[in-house]
Image (cartoon, rainbow, N blue to C red; front, side, top):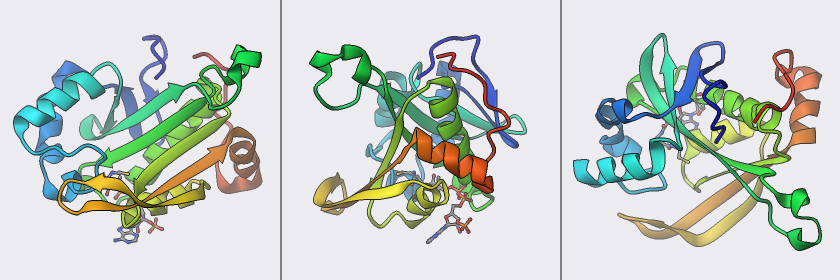
Amino acid sequence: MLTSLDFWPHSGPRVTLAPFSEGDVDEAWAYRRLPEVTTWTGTWIASRDAWEGFARTRLVGQGLAVRAAGVLVGDAKLAVADGWGQGGSDPAAVARCEAEVGWTIDPRFAGRGLGTELGEELLRIAFVHAGVRRVTASAFADNAPSIRIMEKLGMRREALTVSASFHAARGWIDGVDYAILADEWRARSHSGSGDVSRETSRDA
Ligand SMILES: CC(C)(COP(=O)(O)OP(=O)(O)OC[C@H]1O[C@@H](n2cnc3c(N)ncnc32)[C@H](O)[C@@H]1OP(=O)(O)O)[C@@H](O)C(=O)NCCC(=O)NCCS
């Protein structure tokens, strides 16, 4: 994630993203506890204790809180990491060149395009501000709304991972991996499928 406090908050047309803080833990439990959320997230949250443990180790200081009109409507992941390959020959080539994104929207606010807008802003932050060359996202293979967001963002399905994703209630089920390259994102944005007018230089 971008750690500079100067960077945040980041605002899209409706959503504002800022580092997930200790103060968000209780508020987010209102939607993170719901079965229609826990059944799709990559981490199984079975109790309030499990939520607090996950939130404090994986979200506070690492994740993002998502607000619309000042109300917490969800949370997000933007994890910058090294790329895969023979970085030993040129460590700079693979250093922090990829980002994995993820999203959760409170069901009370779902179906209004906020998840799609959140995804658009995550790609913008990753490509424009973090300067990565590739963004990835993954989901259980039957998570239709999340996959729809990936496809609306112009991400490419690169893998159907057969019986490779463990679900707490359903066992081993299929997953999908999506990705988009910076050049593809810029071409898509300049072609009118997105908006690059808010681009600035890398400032991660
Ligand atoms: C996935 C999630 C973020 C979507 O948020 P949202 O704010 O409702 O998203 P949007 O309103 O932008 O809608 C996304 C798209 O999914 C579509 N969609 C919704 N339900 C669908 C379904 N059952 N089947 C197919 N498409 C569906 C919407 O119609 C929309 O596409 P459209 O614009 O072409 O009509 C939200 O439902 C969520 O947090 N789910 C639980 C947690 C989760 O799944 N996180 C992702 C883990 S990978």
